[in-house]
Image 1 (cartoon, rainbow, N blue to C red):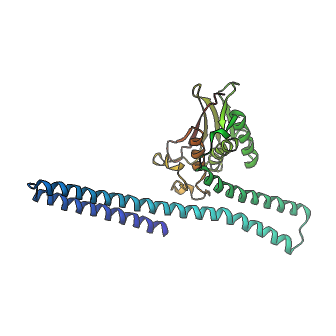
Image 2 (image 1 turned 135 degrees about the vertical axis):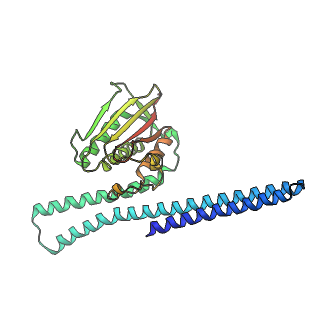
Length: 301
C-alpha cells in the first residue's frame, strides 16, 4: 500500500510539473508571438519565461528525488529493523527456555552457540551501518600503508568459507598474478571490508546453490583487478549502476526473501573511490548471475 501510494504521488508530481511547464510554454510563446514587434518586451518576456520554466523543472526534479529518497530511507529502516529484531527475538526465546526449564548439557551448549551466532548477526548489522556512515568521510592518504592485496583476498575468502560453512569448490579463488608481489596502498581494514562485502554479496544472492568464482588479475603495471562472479539471481541492465547507491535494493520479486540493509555495495564504492579505484557490476540480466569487479591502483613503493 505504501509503495503504491508513493508511486501515485510520484506520477502526480510528474504530471503536474509537465502540465505546468506546458502551460508556461504555451503562454510564453503566445505572448511572444503577439508582441514580436516590440523588441524590449519580447526580450524581457523570453527571460521571464525561461526563469519560470527552469524553476518548474528544478522544482519537479527536486520533489521526485525527495520522494525516492524517502522511499529508500523507509526501506532501509524496515530492513535494519528486521535485521535487529530477528536475532533479538531468537536470543530472548533461548534465554526464556533456559530460565523456565531444565535443559541437558548438550542442548544448553547448542543454545549458547545459536545465541552467539545471533549476537554476531547483530554486531554485523551495527558495524555495517557504522561503516556506511564512515565511508562518506575522506581520510588522509598519509595514514595508508602498503597492503599485500592477494594475501588479503585469500584471507577474506577463508573467513567467508568458514563463516558460511562453504566447501572449497563453492567459493573458488584463482590468481593470474603468478607470484608477483602486488601491493595496494591504503587502509587495511577498509580494504578488507570492501573485499568481504563483495564476497558476502555474491554468496547471499547465489541462492541455495553457492557457486562463486573469485579471480585476481593485473590490468597493467598500475592497476590490479578483483572480480567476484556468482551464478545467482542476476541484475537487470538498467539497475547495474543503481545497486551502488546508498540504501538501494533491486526491485525484483526473486529477491523478496533476501534480507539486507542496502549498504554493502555503497560501502564498497565509497572505499574504492577513497583509494583511487572504482567498482562496477556486469550481468546479462535476471537469472544469469552477476560479476562485481573492483579495480585498485598498485602501490609504487
